[in-house]
Amino acid sequence: MLKTYVAAMSRLEQLKDRLNRDESGAALVEYSVLIGLITVGAIASIVLVKDWVAGAWAALVTHLGAIPT
Image 1 (cartoon, one colour):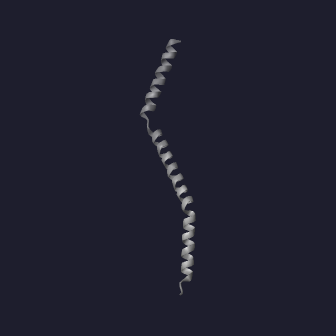
Image 2 (cartoon, rainbow, N blue to C red):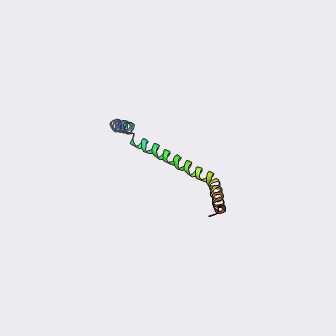
Image 3 (tube, rainbow, N blue to C red):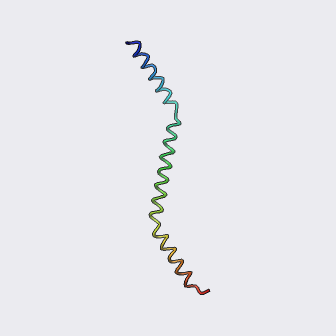
């Protein structure tokens, strides 16, 4: 029984050491979070300025329509 326990603990230590050395998963998570934050920021910016842009285009169209050709 003790031999099985020691073998299991040894395998767990080896797995823990291997996972500590492997950082590719952490980098993937970091990049995914970064992409998510950039996406949320871009969508929020678009939502915040959409009315201003629509008003500016309407003013431009009105102004261009008033120019004699």
